Length: 419
Ligand SMILES: [Fe+2]
Image (tube, rainbow, N blue to C red; front, side, top):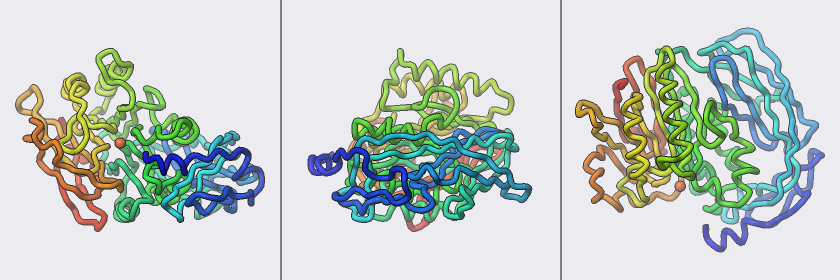
């Protein structure tokens, strides 16, 4: 983060911002336009996570405690509506942060907010639902419960989103909005205070097309920890208990007999690490469950890359044998701002494992060939310096991938048979 950005980003204002009324005083200064509490008192639109066969977590942030807590839930294919009521927890934000280079980005203002969560229970497996909060179409969306083993479904994969920097993230999400996917996995660097173009308020508005389409399962990147309080006051407040097993920082979600594991590359992955011990047990248990097909693992800092970032070869040495043993079909990485696809031979010479780098979600593109002399680059099958996201289609026979750019042009396609 530049000194200029730091200097302008951190301004502590206490008891200012969205407070107890619907039109609290907005903080001033910085590049933001202020963020008065909009009617009907929802300051961050709803999102979903923590979904299994029969339950889901629906969250949003209210800036007025008087805002409705009611959720109307209807099966997408038709059926009776159910009503749920969210819990509300007051939360005090200590500091105000600005996006000094983006006049369209409201500040993340200090003040009191209300974390809303509705536990949606008694749902039907393999079913997509539509929700509305407070009867508002502006606060509506959908999600799908976990599919039955063997089902086909789609997942959106991305990383390094930076919606305030140019229009790449927004254009990618507009393309993705035409795709029918159950949920998205994000390989880290979710929001970029460091760019000077993003705030969390801005992020939630810009990422609305993805949040209203399905559940959001983030991985922790280095930019989730930019400011001392960002991880606790923002990231965890929004995205704790995202999945199952593990912790808030590394976890698993399942659908259709496929397990999706995220690791936290901001913490150690060495031989004695908690994460390695957890992953060993967790993926063995996943494989033992009836209907298991394969796994996808995603994380931020890459195990392999030919671009302008380091690669964690020691972690790869520890984890890759587990990937092979337990049927990991695909590894999704971020952090290097470009696209890469590797097919890496495993110890069984008849098998390979695919690594994708999907770091082109909207940040400034990097040098994808800065370390092209690394031996692993002989296994790089596709790469390019362009913004992109990937659609992963879980099929009857495995996984089909399609990588698209902000114009909607398909830049790479691949098929991975079920291991
Ligand atoms: Fe990063």
